[in-house]
Length: 254
Image 1: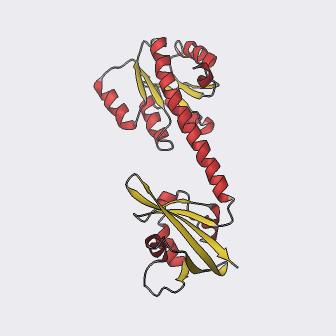
Image 2 (image 1 turned 90 degrees about the vertical axis):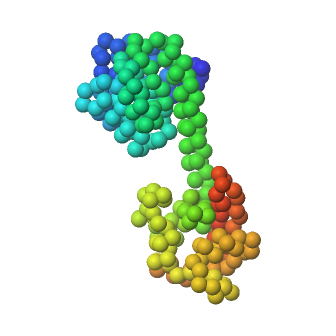
Image 3 (image 1 turned 60 degrees about the vertical axis):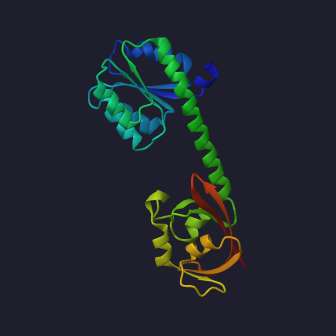
């Protein structure tokens, strides 16, 4: 496990000045990096600055308690493991911790063996999430390098993934921060004129592509800034968790 611990950057939040230096020394021997905060507010700000892989925090602290801090961190990251340390064993703390999505809960006085068993389990989770993010970033970079427009569309009319060329061409880069929060369909209807070659049906072009994935299509898009361009459309459908996903590429025709 030493090799796994050595890959982890841990945020340790504890207001007790007698306990904090003891556990800080123990943790520094194991972890790649340990960031230490004295209360929840400092811990939250340190999380924003350092982006640790794992969080170990007390509950009862001044300025902001551990659960409040965890709740604010969950607004940014729903997957980072958060382990709570507390001198309290009342059920309401456990219920609130579960609702927030706490990964582990240890009652003080902390047994070091139990602590490292808990850390070991959550280090594996943290490394899995870290590797997944790195793979997703790598995939995004690969797709962004493609000369074609690439995007993933679901059967419930959501855009799951786009490359940079898609955002640039459809003028979404300045209006979209989180793809899940943007109604891309309405945006494309309002700002772009698309004609599907040899098709007279009054149907939105994204819907038509989704429903006719077996045959290559040719479309003509009029973009306000880039003018009129022709594209060859290729799509492939896959099943994922009960949904149907279309992987679509638009290859510009010269």
